Structure formats: C-alpha cells, structure tokens
View (cartoon, rainbow, N blue to C red):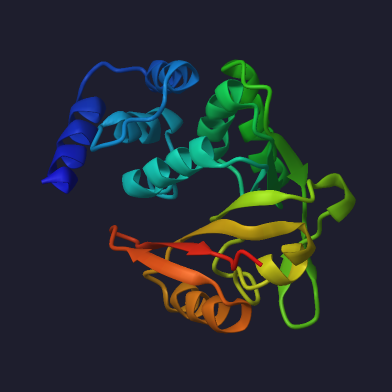
Length: 227
C-alpha cells in the first residue's frame, strides 16, 4: 500500500503544474523546522521529484532512513557520494548542529550539489573533492583523512558507482580510524550481489550487526561493535 501511494503521488507531481524547485524547497523548509515524519509520508516522493534525478536518486524508504538516522546521531556524518541526501541531511543539521562531510569524485556533480545547497541556503555540509584512486585491492575515494572528523557516528554509503573496481568495499578499510565504536552504516543497493556480499564481509571481518530492509533496491543498516 505504501509503494502504491508513493507511485500515485509521483504520477500526480509529474502530471500537474508543480515546479520541481518549489517541491524541494518545501521539503527542506519542513525538515529545517521539525523532525522527519516517523511513519509513512509522501514527503520523500516530493523530495525525489524536486531533485529531478529520479532514475538514480535513492528511493523513498532509504531517504527516510537516512534522514531519521541523521536526526538521531550524536556525532559527525560521512557520506560516500553526494546528492539529494546531502541536502536533506544539511537541512537536518541546521536543527541538530551535527557535522556532515560528503565525498564526491565527479567535479560536475559536486558543483551541482554545492549550487543547490547555495540556492536553498544550506551551509552545513562540506562536499570534498575526492577522485577515485588505486588502493591496491580496490579503488576508492582519494580523501585527506586529516580533513575529516575523528568520531564519526553515521556513514551513508551510496557510492562510489558499481562500476568502480572493488565497488564500495574500501569504505571501512580507509575510514576505519575515523569510525566511532557503534558507528551506524547505511548501505544502499543491497539488491545487487556485490553489496549483498559486502554486508556479509563486514559482518564477518569487523563484527558488524546487520539488518536488511526489503525496499525495491534493498538497503542494509549495519552497526559496528561498541568496543
């Protein structure tokens, strides 16, 4: 039923006279003022429509989980890849004061995200230029670790692209020194074999606990051991 409501709302938005920029602006204004809805809401459908990148944007249930997790976290957030979630977490950070750092390997996309944040008056997140580089067994973001916080409580892992050598497997090995015990990791696209295997690897190699959410593309919520 929830799936059908999202689809009906999306059809109404595309078939009406709703301006995309106005739709996203309303969502951001809502998240600036009050916590995200705790139950089903078409707010996330409006956000996706407003962003205008429906084919590649995370689906509604993942967006909801990202925003609610960003509201609950007590420490900094690192995002692997940038986009709509960066803006939504930025809106939340105006209330919570939590730091948000995003890693982005595509200069054009980084420019778009930064331009959109300026347009909507979002100042919190920092989108770092982080081209992909060879780490030996995998490619991952080339980031200056000194520029990132040392007590990260939440990682939103929706990049790099699936075509990257090693996929998203470099996240924990590269950032391990930055992750607090008990850090939560949200991993999107678990419907794919590589991400599904990555969940098993992180559970085995790092002692993480994992819960798979059965959304269209599936996503996992993992938690590293407390210590």
